[in-house]
Image (cartoon, rainbow, N blue to C red):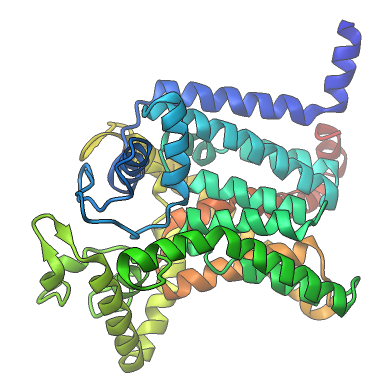
Length: 430
């Protein structure tokens, strides 16, 4: 029986790597007393309030306690709503959200391996899984009460099903849920629609039917949220955060990453701020208007900021690991600066290799017109970078894509090392 178990493990090395990844994540969340700050406290408090039947209410920093009579749509309800279900069942404790992150991370590791194995072979799949399972950033994020891990899990599950079962109803429901978890995903359905239409192995009739079912499924998930906002705010808005973010990153004082619009000299948004918070719908509308006007008047500066946003996301502001080291409101663990240095040291090279893979994928698509999983990774990359190009430079926008990006990075590393050290490298992963 023991020999059978050993043989099984040898044939399924990925299970050992996943197990090690899970243990590392468990040790981390119990060893590091991460206390939710800013957005992460907002998620926790909103989830707790929904679980208690208080509703989805606006609140202000640092504890974001909801104000009766002031509903919010600043962020979609996807992640707070998910936390509410967990908190209702298990209690509103930080550890509940953190353990949920580990469940999601386990799913991500499994799906990442399966996708890499299906399209690039077992050796690249094992390398991919090893890199992601041992990734300090992927480990650290598990102690943060954040939407990124849920978003990443839903994306990987949707992609996995898209390239396996490909049921448009199921995938549409998952993608609809995903768009409610993080606003940056609001146009992700377009990636799946575009890929389905450029495929060469199915006819036009099938494509139209597929997209129709997919669109209906996405709409079924999003519709209740839009209807709720129409009832509450008088407009069918998706998120009142959109105009705010658009303006913060497109004005005379924009830095290519987040800045406080209420602290700008003669800030036009101050008129909508009170001691109790701010009028989020008014700021959403004003932000969209001001950002559009500014871009029209400053096209050159807009392009400069756009490239700065990309640079911030992959190079200058790669410091999101610090959110795993908050130990109180405005309190940071003594090793935070070292963790940030480690992130920059490890992930700047990671992103350089990623861009090499993207260039390869782009050239491959242009020259060979290949429509496959590599093309899909390219579309994912182009979509998210287009969003950052217009909105905000933020490494937190990049992190949820690390699983799928690690596949591309592993592909490049494997093929380079295979040429340099063919025998040794092949033996290590065999």
